[in-house]
Image (cartoon, rainbow, N blue to C red; front, side, top):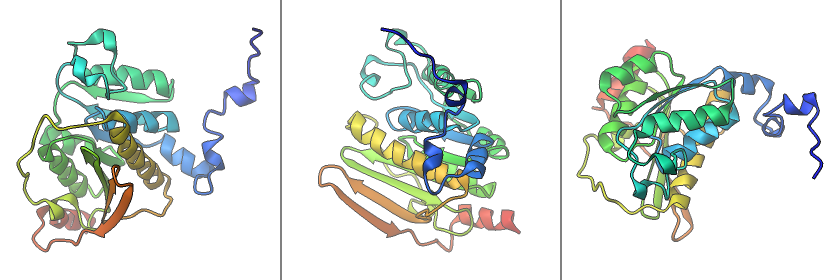
Length: 255
């Protein structure tokens, strides 16, 4: 088959089609390109999320994912390599994102769980934090670091056929700690279907891109819940808690 190379104009305009969207103009794409996104975990949910951010043109992604790759991870972790079972997962994901994003994308990948100090350090540079971790400890840590820095936070989670996304506007909307003050008991070996985890991951990516581009609408402070078994979507506002330390820190930052 004869291969016809695309013209330079087409080849050099990777994001032209997404810029046909009514909410994404050249200025919005520039803001996406110059942005830094901090992500906690890039597994079945965070992997598709990070992949969508990379190909959309985000300029820098900082990711944390602990542990070595298991064979049972491969049904859902799209950024990992089947031939590298037993090797650290974070660095594998970073390599995949660099390949997908091309030369414009800078990726920092860490093979351990994010710490409080690291979250605080990276949120000084990040424009947004996205939580895709299975544990509430990590999700609340990222929530608190984002709010303390006065930056937006998107939390995404799933269990079985249930998913949710929460977009937090620091100091203005309710946050994850308003909803869950302390980490509840957690089941590590929970059921997950890749199609469901990827679905909520991509919803979170879509919202994060809108936030970075300065576009809307954004369901700030609303728990967006989708039941994939019943095909039911609900939105419930998360009220700000008067005693929430994360919201109090956000208010101090904004002064």
